[in-house]
Image 1 (cartoon, one colour):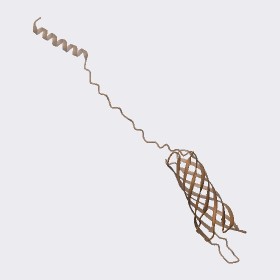
Image 2 (cartoon, helix red, strand yellow; image 1 turned 45 degrees about the horizontal axis):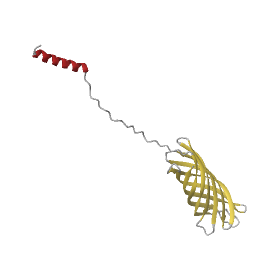
Image 3 (cartoon, helix red, strand yellow; image 1 turned 90 degrees about the horizontal axis):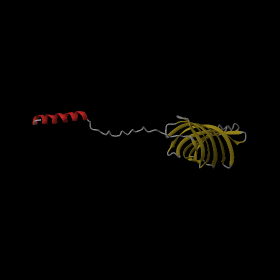
Image 4 (cartoon, one colour; image 1 turned 30 degrees about the vertical axis):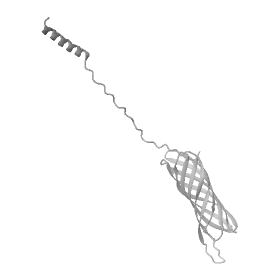
Length: 209
């Protein structure tokens, strides 16, 4: 075999070997894809709670008519303060929240020439809309009011209504604001009933159990 035949054999043999092995593409490692899940509001209002409230009182007292003295009924308005305790339970049905609450308040410091103070117990039913951490609601109530006006004791019961909102500051702490009014017929003067509109605006803080 001459030199030309040897060179040809080497070239042909190398080409055959390369073709037999085939082409291997370079491996490129793909960067991992991290999927970010959308934020989901997991606020759940279901549970018992208890706390304190404080606020202002706006009352309107309707005096009876005294026909013998020819005095028509008058209305007296006064502002005061209230503070107290409450317990309640809420049930979350999705977008609708229902609940019940029982509260006790001491009311005093009214801007009247005579001393006026009272104790108010309210039983309330609440219905609200679950908008996440905020819960706007409407409420109806039945209340009992025991008080003292100028040294005379009196009491009465009455229905009421109101509205408010609660804010879930943490999974355990709720803050709230509420307006509520109740109407009472008070037996203060013999055979004469006084009409009392008792309205409150309250700020509250509650602990969820």
